[in-house]
Length: 310
Image 1 (cartoon, one colour):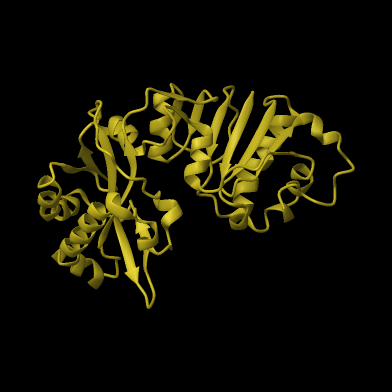
Image 2 (cartoon, helix red, strand yellow; image 1 turned 180 degrees about the horizontal axis):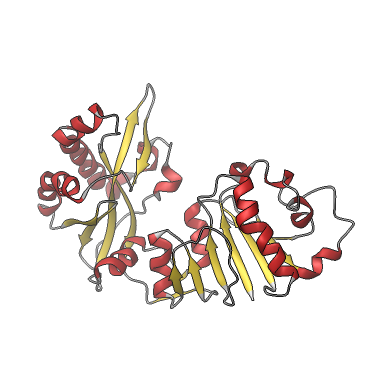
């Protein structure tokens, strides 16, 4: 039985291999082929869609509303951008701490902008906003927000004739949001204003989603939505590792404390591996680095000086 852990980039876990028991375990691991970096690429390794792509908007819309049908959906999530001397950068997107009433207040003046194009805008949850597009809509590729954070947004928006309409729509939406009284109140209370939208995840429901695990433990709605379409069981991430007889994907991308990660997850997993409760453990880092751990690797005494994670 295998367990796979989704982990942040190794740079975010500095000091992990200095924790007793972790370095000697990881240094005996096998390195798997390096994969593409980034959170979206990391999720796409776990959930394969047919046809290929990452139609996040349609999948999450179906999971929370059940009305995605055969239409084309696009996420238009609330965002905060900030201008500096040389660029306008995306600093936050999605979960901005909005209440349902605040969300509706922001949507009210935005809906006519999209409605005039025949593209209804809706927000069944404060952090996930959707644009409903015609089934045959030709939508340019947009950058996922995790990859866009901190970047100059104009470098990431689609260019050319295909992108011109979307750039204009985004500019109009930014003007509306800039003038909204809710953002003045947020600024006065020290909260970042919702002064932009971020388009991403366009597409139609996939014909099929395939994964190689039976269960997913995650607090990420998007990952659970794809897992549900693949037929996997989903549950919230527990506080620490517990024995699981299924092939399971454990989403620890939010981990930032190396000691807590080691004590709550890695060291208990090492014990389960040695006890024969698990046959293999895979570590998948957001920077594309991947490790395979098995019980037989304990006999690799010659691998002591350098961890494969480093």
